[in-house]
Length: 386
Ligand code: V47
Image (cartoon, rainbow, N blue to C red; front, side, top):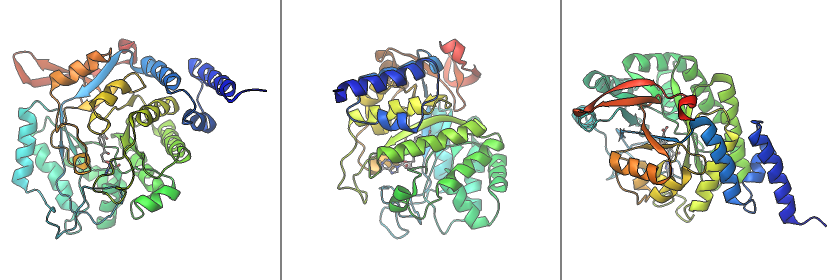
C-alpha cells in the first residue's frame, strides 16, 4: 500500500523536475502545492530556485511615499477599512496645497516614487483625478507617479463615457508613469461577487492592464488572500495573470496582499499566519514563471515574515513607505515607515544584497555628497544578478 506521505513525495519530485528543467507548472500542480500536507520548506526551496534564476542574490527596495488623496468611496468592498461615506467623521479630501506639500516632502526625503490610490469620490469629476497627477508632475518632475488602479480607471470610464485608451493617454500626458496593481482582489466571481460585487470584474481589470501595456505603461498586479477564498480561487487568479503576461509582458511585479480583518466587514476572520503567507509567496513565484518580480510587502506581512519571504520566492521589499493608510486603518501594526538603513540591514540579514531600484527596476545611483540627488542607471539585468 502506498502511504500518503510517499504519494506527496512522488508528486513533489515530479514538480521538482519540472521546475529544474524550466517547464511550466499547471493548475493541478498549483493546487497540490497549496495543500497543507506538502512540506512548506520544500515548496520554498523550489521557489527560491526560481527566484535566484531570475534575480540572483539581489533583493530590491525603493524609496517611496504613498498618497491617498481621499477616502470617500462609492464602493463598499467588504474587506476595506479605509473607505468612508461623504458625511463620516473620518471622511477627508486633500487640498491641492496638501498634495503639493506631500510631493515636496517626498523629494526632500529622497523618494523616487509616489504611489497614489484613493477612494472613488462621487462628487469629483475625472479632471480632479487627472489634474492631481499634473499638479504633482509639474511641481516635482523627478518623482515617478505610480497612480490609480484599474478600478479607478474603470470609474473614470463611467464618469467620462470615454475609452480606457483615451483616458490613459490623457493621464500619461499629465505625468502618469505606471499603474499599481491594486483592485485585483480575487478574480473568480464566486468570491468577487461576495467581497466587492460592484467593482470592475476580472475581465475589465485585465483589459485595462492589457490596454495600459499596449500604450507602453508598465503595471503591477496583486492578489488579496486570506479571507473567504480557497486554493482553487488563488490558482485561478494566478493563472489569469500569467495568461495576460504571456500576451503582453507588461507586468513587472506581483504583490501578494495578506488580508487584515480589523475594522472591516470580515472582522470575524483571523489574519493569515506566517506559514500561509510564505506558502502564497512561494506558490505564486512558481506559477508566475513569466513575471520578473514578487514583492514581500513588509507593511502587511510584518517585518519578520517579509524577511523570511526573501528565501521563499520574493525578491523585492517594496519601499520605505511613508503615509500608508489602507493597512494601518485595517489594524496593521507595522511601523509607518522604515529607513533605508533598516531595509538594507533586513535584506542583508536575509542573505541577499540590497539594491535600490526606481519604479521601473533601474538601479538608482545616489550622489554621495547630497543623498537626495540621484540618477537612474541601466535596468538591472538577470545576468548581472546571477
Ligand atoms: O486593492 C484593501 C488591498 C489594495 C485591505 O502595485 C487590503 O506596488 C488587506 O494594491 N487588508 C491596495 N488588503 C494596495 C495595493 C498595493 C500595495 C502595495 C504595493 C502595490 C504595488 C500595490 O489593498 C487593494 C486591496 O486589495 N486592501 N483593504 C485589508 N483590509
